[in-house]
Image (cartoon, rainbow, N blue to C red; front, side, top):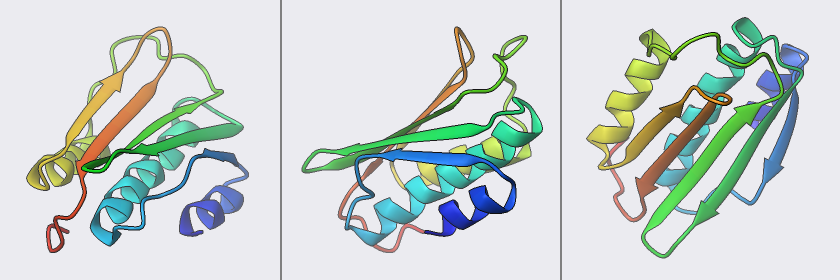
Length: 118
């Protein structure tokens, strides 16, 4: 709900597919990833819609985030926000990938059942 409020405040539509995991630390980390994409979608891509596709297995939770904005003109260089997010995800034992072509796509996968890694 916090992501939805942030999207509304910057006039960005939010389309969610799937659900956040019930496990608190995994849900928090995936929400952080989506929140970082809100800022970047507005600032760099001039997007009007942000899409977050959540899925999970017994052991992991994943979100794939993309938008309807301008495609990157070059390879995306991780700045402050994405670099900080990567450190947080990897410290929790997760993985993060940033795709630049043919469109921006952020994929974050985190382990479930690792409380206390926030």
